[in-house]
Length: 308
Image (tube, rainbow, N blue to C red; front, top):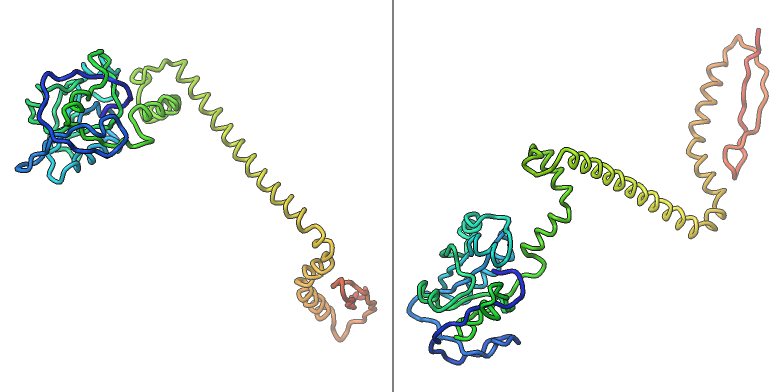
């Protein structure tokens, strides 16, 4: 699976017999003649690409290729480092790592290492390929051999379209890493990688660590600001919606609050009274009216022991 739209290809020297098959879609190849698939053996379908940082988008394209026919033998070609670096650019994984990733995909029956950048008739004959599966976007050949890498197989009716998975690609994954480069450097340093392994100088390491601390501090400040903002909104909303209700029911609310303590208060006064009363004691007493409930007045007798 190649990851870019463009155009590249090498035209083949001879064409094969074909029958007219109408394919779905609005692409230019949607009404080209297709060669009939064999009926006495599995259909040999070929898919190719770079497959760097093998991801589920790659796997889905290979699944589609495998399911092109009910009985399919899927061959997957993977370009070497030399070819890829020449025509596309540097890869993250080595060619052997990319080959091995493909061998562990359940849809793949056979991996063809060092696959050609452009497919021609000789390659199809060598591997007895019946059809080539890939998305329909034209893929430019950096070598300038043609307009589309798959121009030849489309012309002879041996092209089967697969659909790309949106939102995932090797380029997107690399972009995420580059975007958060500083975080990944610190992450690997903390996990035991040396500055030399990461290509980071002493000064750069210190600068990255300071920047990371500042970033964490900014995140904490922002988090606290959001929490305070939420509380302010709640208070403002409550005050705005229930202000009148609070004023009208203030007496009732306060009375209800004080009522919770009334029973305990009575018990305390009674206990104090019983403690101070004895047959030999002489008391002077006065009573004080205390407001325990805003809605009622309850007399409370306070006894004071007379000093001998």
